[in-house]
Image: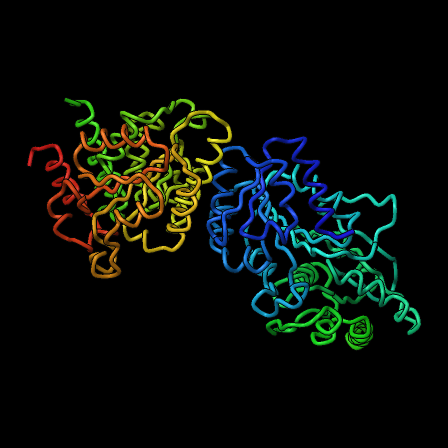
Length: 312
Length: 271
């Protein structure tokens, strides 16, 4: 099932239960899949037109009145175009607004560089009080949305819209703010978020064939980050690789490196967009272009382990 | 008529001067230009309860030109939201009264503002929320003329116009001065009335220092089927001759104790 559909179905259930929830979009109701909800709740779904800055501040005003706005647009428009409104109208003013950044990073595919939010986490991670979440699969997203709603305070959600392979098994229990160990290992810690968790899962057989026991941990809540989970794993394995659909500057790599630097200083290498702007292409091309494939993950793990030995 | 109101407006001016003089520098010009509007709102029109500043369904004021904080604080203190003595803590470390309005710090402040253009969008959101709640509140906002050069103001104008937000009344403090000089020279707004009308608003142009004109404009604005803009022609620094004379230099200016004493005497009519 498309992640977008999971979002729409879950938010529909939430809207039925809580009349305070309102949705806002900026001419992307169709892209976000919420046109049906606009028919169901014509007075609770607002399309402000192509005006993202206006949308974020309007949502803040609504939140100040006790409503619980969820706003959605493409990731770079939510965080780059409307950066000031996100920082001040929402975060500085402590308004309980949930912001969906759709198709972050290379997920923007054919929309290309202008539509690729590669620094959205870098920018928003510096806003005090903001929770940042990026789902891995449908099962996790479905459980996360009500928890994000229950959380008092603003949140930014990086939402890949298309279908994505299942990573978490039946019986999985999500907890906002607590990292999930997908697979235990002893040689290297692989901290991954969003789309890159699937890529890491696909890298696991390659790692095993190379004689590397990797521990795969999903950091779904990038802020506040699960410091204990990161340090626990890093202390066990002694070296780290991070994997994110984002610039290696300011995102997951930075957040993990900051954590390690003050708690367990071990080698850490990034998989992500290495200080470049985006470009057009489908995901398989873009993953190769930006060195985000399972082979790149294997190579980074080897290098991190080599550094661990070198630093001894 | 309105003797109490006239006195309240004088008091707002006096307390604004005291507030800014307490730290010796501040946004005096654009605060003094709002004294009549704030007086009419807080002492005639707004349904608020100073003992219960977060009362649901109250009328609200979003001061989008957040740097007018000192005048807003003076009005709120005089209306009873907090002690007048607290006005002397403007911008002191740990104060509840920062340069720019902050709803999480100051009792009675309805929105955090300061980055120009955002407050009017927030006001649109507040008005939409009030309409959804059906609580009959009137949502007021004040924007600056320089602020109206921000694109976001017009994003908000377009949406509020199309939404026919008849519970939203916005003032433009049209004093024709911004930091770098006259608005009409830096980046002219004229014809401002036509612009707002073209965006679907009910527009009135008044003298922003005439109480009767303000009160009548608010009353008329409340009986429209669309959002209302009141373009208030004002004088930046109004009420204190040497401040008015500074022109664009009075935006964020130093103010000594001696200057403050002279200004207060002038405001009281003792000068």
